[in-house]
Length: 435
Ligand SMILES: Cc1cc2nc3c(=O)[nH]c(=O)nc-3n(C[C@H](O)[C@H](O)[C@H](O)COP(=O)(O)OP(=O)(O)OC[C@H]3O[C@@H](n4cnc5c(N)ncnc54)[C@H](O)[C@@H]3O)c2cc1C
Image (cartoon, rainbow, N blue to C red; front, top):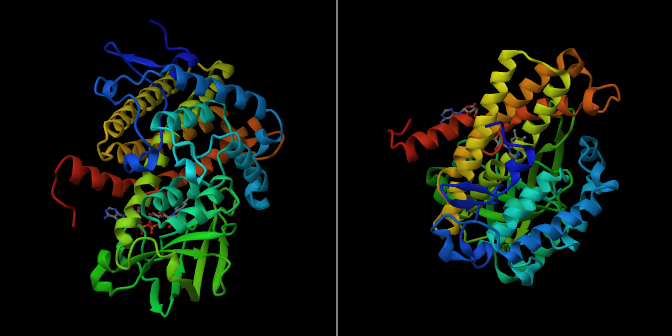
């Protein structure tokens, strides 16, 4: 039997007589976030085959992507766009939203379509398959929005959710601090109640999109340092408030995608409290669960696309190097393992169970597979890969070398590989705690 065709890898897959849909979805915190489940009676049998309505939804989306990706939108993913404030990428998200494909599983009253996880999965899959640009408001869509849907007041939902979907307001996530990353509960940015406000002082770091964001989901300390998790409070902060200072940090790629943010006597109205005072950790867990699941699950579809491109690159070079062939075979195996692991996570969620360890497993695997994939691409390209991204003479416009540099962050962002291994060792294997 020969290798599966590229098309076959994206087609519904049969496992022991049952059918699962290729591609993966956002994780769901609970069913409330993503609307009512459909066809639950068939899920116990692991049958994810699309019904007629879902197949129509997918076909309409495919046609829309075909019609809309050809023009300026296709260029929207260019790395340099980060320096232009992401205007082209905002425009792309506006168009996706107008067409009804942003937040398909969000409630209808807040601009979503109230559809199920299956439709979210279809959107992710088809967007990746068509190599559509990522939506610019990644933190709003994947973290802030779901957290507000889950924990927000009706006023907060009305005020923010639509503006997230159409990219009117870009969001950032102010969790990490210079001395608190993996050990997030040790954070020190203080919020002190004062009349109808909180007064915030402190520093955040690595804040993606902080330089263009209108709003920040900010994790602060209202209790004492000894209280650790119990002393945290979650706020929504207007980035244009007096006392907010943003300093961009330039990454290895040359992009300034993330920032340091300083808060000096920043007044935040109590109405911007998400959850209660001291409930910040619980609310933050909703955000982090969505972050990890999004990174680890949806992005594995992109790993499959990148892998296909790499195979094309190797075939074009006619390279019969046996070591290279083995590396590719190994990457293929691991990319497929991520896919099957994603199906396990999706099955669990469709059964209405809380998300399991699949998100952490896939985030860990994705970051390491993606890095090795990029290493292999550079090995194939040889010295030509040293040409900078964007140089015309660079192979593929320098895309591979850009992605190679960007992939270095994969094993840090959204939880480091060491920390994820600890989580899996303790919570899945039941090994003793490391400290
Ligand atoms: C591209 C990118 C974008 C990011 N965007 C954001 C953002 O928008 N908002 C935000 O809040 N944060 C963001 N981050 C920060 C990210 O969440 C942190 O970098 C990450 O959680 C690690 O924290 P740290 O950098 O403080 O490293 P540390 O926690 O100090 O870790 C340093 C090293 O020690 C290891 N280590 C730490 N604890 C343990 C342990 N218990 N056992 C074994 N090893 C351990 C780590 O694995 C790592 O190798 C971003 C990071 C990157 C790279």
